Length: 138
Image (cartoon, rainbow, N blue to C red; front, side, top):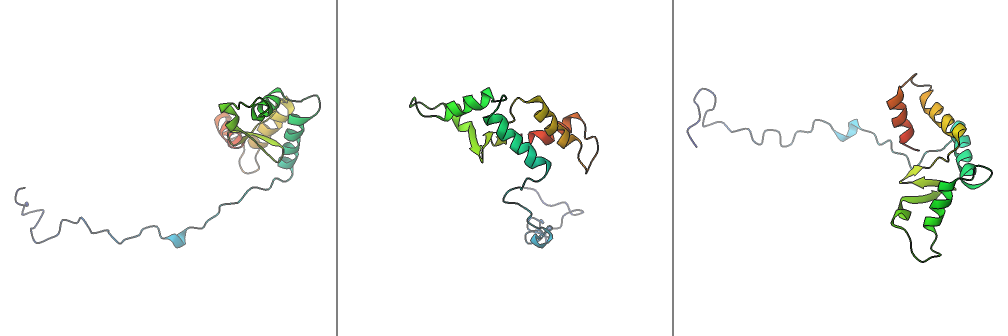
């Protein structure tokens, strides 16, 4: 290493490597924890969840995918599929990779998209934003 430049760095000054050691810019008191244990479905959401349960289980809309997921979970044959770990059930609602599986009922799927598209907060989020909003849960 050479000698410091006399115009910019004097040898009796520090190099500044530990100047900001104990400085905190964003203090913890500026933040609030707003995490929730779970969401409570009310109104439209509750009706949609009920329709999803019904669509997976009963009636003319008994879903082929729901039957297949149940078959994957069954251990009658003694052999469980690797894919069976991706499916779960929570309060009668079939879940795939942590998201709600919506049965193939066009009216139900349309209501879910409309619910996310016609939000009271913002109008017309667009095609891709609507897809993102729906994909968070379903």
